[in-house]
Length: 143
Image 1 (tube, rainbow, N blue to C red):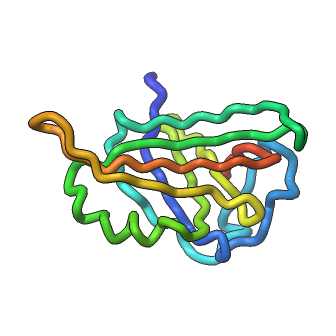
Image 2 (image 1 turned 135 degrees about the horizontal axis):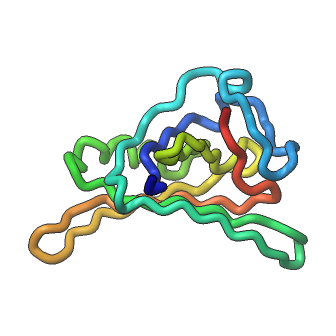
């Protein structure tokens, strides 16, 4: 079975309890810490990438997590959503085709969301989205 990314959801950081004190790689039951329901942000699945790098610097051990993807189909339907996500504190949940769920960020370490409108060649038009998060705990997993 080919692994890939099938869904991305988001929710306000203020709508959940802080779990950033948990050890790296912990599994969290979102329903027990989240007040509300995550919202789905559609994207073009074959364009999605999820990356987590661990390293050391003057501050000690830390993780740099990143999710990137494109929104191609009906992209203009999502412009308002992307604008609302920009500059605000949201947490993101990325689900793979095998059902594993990664949580990017926490209320203590909220990720940064950016996007751009890109038109190239004669046939490609897409919003490029990027979520990045530097933290001491790395990705968490959702149960």
